[in-house]
Image (tube, rainbow, N blue to C red; front, top):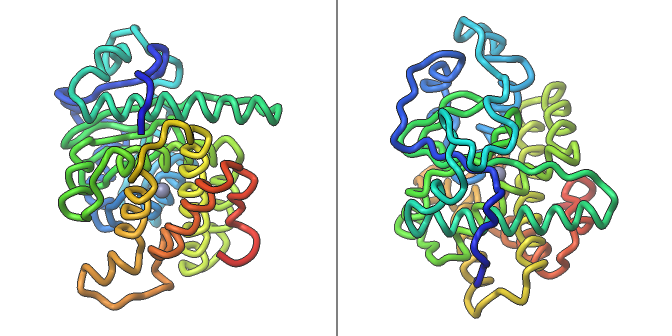
Length: 305
Ligand SMILES: [Zn+2]
């Protein structure tokens, strides 16, 4: 996919090479998150993050861990060129290497696309921020760790990317290519859109009152909508697509379906534990976005998925 260079006014932070010395609720998540699972999308993690954001820490998760967490956005305003702790301008942060720049380009394109879509429907758009981390970092939702894969933190509206995940995607999951990477960014951007539309909040509320299986089912619908939104972004930039892009996206969607991942892990395929949807569902909703280019076609919450 031929993307323009990122706009310089995108909000980018680079946490790589910084050290984070505990504090707040960050460290508290360290022990918990790896158990929840890690892969692009991080539905289980999103659930935790939302709980974290709303209740202000893990102290409220059944008293497992004491102490209050910090749920306050660390940096919500645009920081381009601001410098200071944790902040670097887009040009500096995005110029680190090719994978970083590609991520910035996709993020910038998604921001422009969604800003226009919101403007067309008369809704107010709020830009997220893009945060690069490596090894371990800090998010408004607690510690960011590479094992978590890419994720979106609702409380600071940040999309957190460790670009080493792209290598994992290519080498471990067999999903190589630039569009597979853009799909990751566009999917996480989709979660930001869900925060703006209120879908994430509605799911969180439903999850509070339902069983674990019902909560997982809601997570699947949320994740599939993010896949559809990723497709919408690509469709809105259809003239930039190159031969093979759609196939790369489909390969990635196939590789990270819950059933495929569970089969890979040698375990039983347990639909009630799905949080992201099957490979077939992920492909279908990505394709739906790609074919329609219309966010209204991404209603995964009513009817069959
Ligand atoms: Zn997701």
